[in-house]
Amino acid sequence: MMLKINGQRLWTSLMAMAEIGATARGGSCRLALSDEDRVGRELFAHWCTEAGMSLSVDPIGNLFARRPGSDPDAAPVMMGSHLDTQPKAGALMGSTVCWPDWKWYARSMT
Image 1: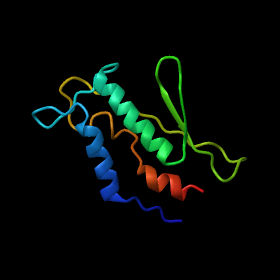
Image 2: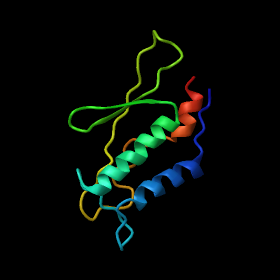
Image 3: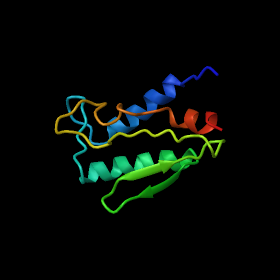
Image 4: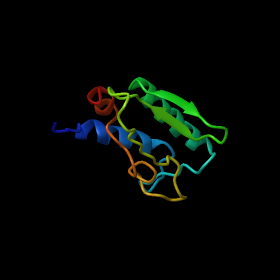
């Protein structure tokens, strides 16, 4: 099966996250535990639940989004990333390590 990502939708998602904590020079600043970090996590959580994933948060604030596959005997696929940034980071910092097109993922992995 050929997988296809909606590039425009992916870019729109990346730019929506980049706007949170946007800096005057085109970067982003979402330091861990800051208000901007909280807003970024809320947006990510919204996208995950909108895509039909279950969401949980551990005692130190890590988010876990889960979507069961169609074969309960198959091995899981795991991905990880972070949403916070370093000070004076580029616009895509914290968003590109593992940033699938969520709506594609939710619909195609059934």
